[in-house]
Image (cartoon, rainbow, N blue to C red):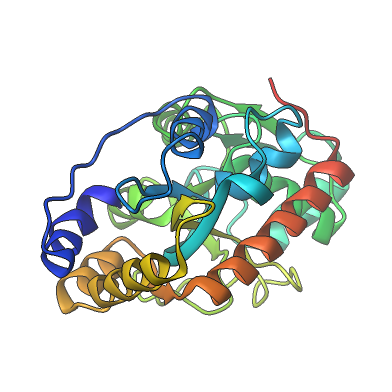
Length: 277
């Protein structure tokens, strides 16, 4: 996302925007760097939905989210899609639920790792549907997808963008999307609520942050610039192609959204007894 918006943000600000990747530890390395940066508008962070998960998954973070950062814009959000290997007999979510209730703890789903968005999508599914699935974590979404396509694991809460080509090729069967409404990328696929799991709504998302203490005038300027970039036709088109939707939420709305997400995943992690690997 950062590379996607950098050119437009640079034009809006009249400055060159350099994207510096600092991956690792579920986003903690990059966040630690920004937490220590000067609050002068020259360092921004684009983070993902793991931002709202990490405080509960890793209680000893090297920074305090409530004191280290200021959310300035939720950029976009993306639903996942529950997919199945076409060879398995579960053609609907109701089939999955029936089998899971018949054989608790045996119906397996893959994820990109413990505490990942895909894993937590499955945990919330278990909690709302009152079923017990078998979690099979992988080191990344690619290996998980490969094994589901190969039939090693039957189910996967996949990212729409990464699974779309495999769905169109018939290598994966989509059962339900995790958004509140159907996605234009898969218009014939029902939502999880339509498929019978009431209250289920999960997104992966991206948001922009600055170090806490950044002056309000700078926060407003950066947020306005980001909202303009996200509202541009080319960005909207690209986000739609990836199966998502532009949010472009200003600071107050962004803060509320992220607070809600943080509370949601704190409860899911606690109730599901999810621990870091």
